[in-house]
Length: 144
Image (tube, rainbow, N blue to C red; front, side):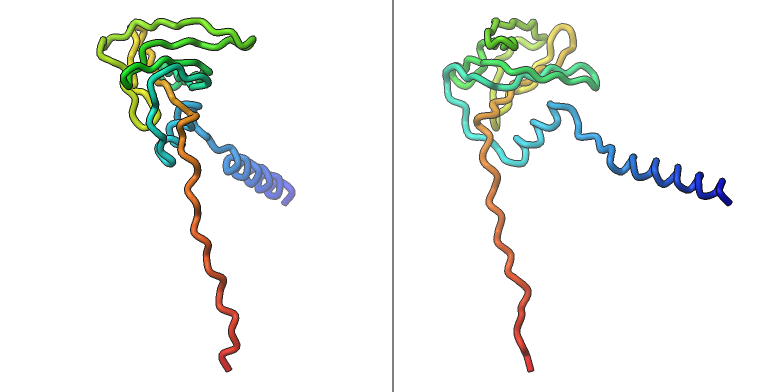
């Protein structure tokens, strides 16, 4: 009988742990969902600090704090930040030599010669959360 209790307990624990171990997705997926759900304001020309640069290879994604220069609605320069606050210009060799456009606060995905997928996300352009409607309380009337 003890054997059944121990087996039941182990199965229950494994099911419980599996329910709590949810995959929240990569940093790219999490940012992308925010942009899709909330939308973003237009990105003006000029230098933009504290943007997110995502680099994806297969199932791996890395997100870095960066700075981008935008001219005529196109990304023309990227600088990556170091932990000490300094930054350095980053140059990528893209397969597609077309301009790097921005839509809804996110850049078009560009593919490097090394098959890395690169996106720029202007997080300071994300629109605030939408207001939720206030629900009415259940009626509490004496109908008799």
